Amino acid sequence: MKKDTIIFWTATIIIALMEGVMPALTSQTELAKEGIRHLGYPLYFGNALVVFKVLGALALVFPQVPKKVKEWAYAGFAFDFLFAAISHAAVDGINNGQTFFPLVVFAILIVSYIYQNKLNNQSA
Image (cartoon, rainbow, N blue to C red; front, side):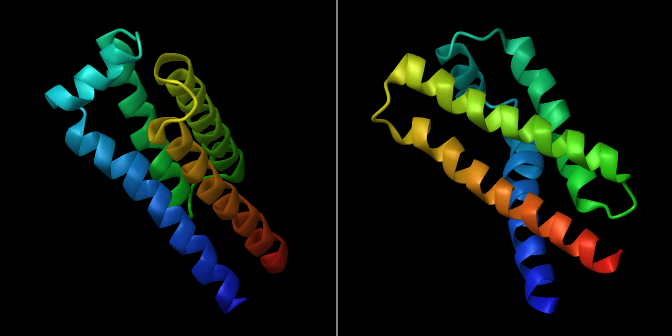
């Protein structure tokens, strides 16, 4: 059970840092704004995305958050990563690191989700 806990928290903290902390700190930089514009999205979309990413990261990290809310956070992040890969592939082509990277983070999210359910089943 200790190994499962370590795997879960490692994957979950990576997601929380990459999708909660980094966007909150960098969302108003010119680089971030240009990234949103480059993909053809309006700037307000980037702002809304940051708000939901921070809320989702908080939902994953805090144990007191109800399981249903955590499920929605996992689903939201899954859509975010898949659509990010699709957006980058459509704009930048498929042979691009920016197209592939969201899929790597999606794999980390899957690990977090699997181990969260594993830990919940062990404690039940």
